[in-house]
Length: 335
Image 1 (cartoon, rainbow, N blue to C red):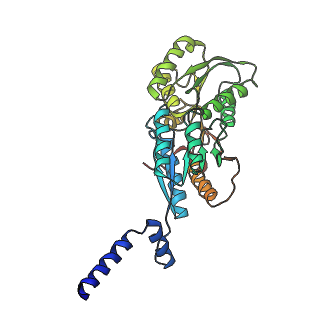
Image 2: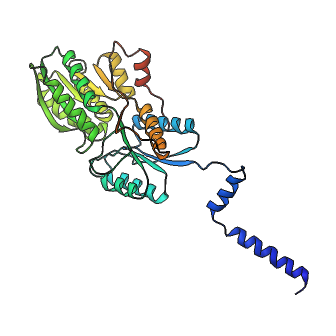
Image 3: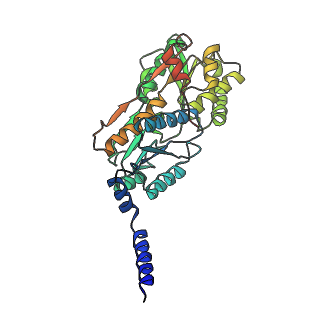
């Protein structure tokens, strides 16, 4: 073999062996040379659903935290509707397969997501639960949420005040197994016991996960109790939207006092015109922000408290234009 052919063979061999280095080896070499960029942490943020305005505000807060931290990429993925537990489980499993660095999850069924969360943790992926609690078992980093029980008590006091502390009221429930709304329901029922002249005439009916189903359910309840009904509490945005529409269709808006939980354009208008006596508010932006920040800090070795509260508030016609309440009535969103 002549010398020219030998040099060509050595060059080809060098290229081949260089190309066989792992990505991590090449990344380490780049970092050692000072020219490599820090690899971003991939944080999956998985809401109960993606269609309601509340979750779009959570997304905004999560991205706000990522932008502030600088080394974080948000992967936002979840089921369209909040009742689709099977799809949410599949999203969690897909994030495990993807090998994300952490998961922030709002379980739409407190028991149904336990195995998927346990699987993530077993694979070394830390998990923060937000908005709605998970059944006991997995060793999560923290739970970031509204104090939903207290939110239910705020609703009870607001409804009692609106009806003069006497009369018949209805509690419209959400979906079985949703920890956040179950806490609101229990907080309301416990809170209303303080008022001996208020009777809860219905507390076992569920509005479902959309406004149409809630409107139909409330229409049925109004046919049963409407003539003697003084108030109603709906525990989440879709239920409240359906309740407001049913009351208006029956000509009972402003006559049957109504407390909602979470705002929408329709409910804010109802607050203005007296169709809605109050809206219990959360801080979804802060919820998304703190979920991501807490998770990233945990990845860095910082211990988090078991529960992080993001606050709960009551909007009324009287205070709805105050800066903080106005901000929470229309929090920024990210599509």
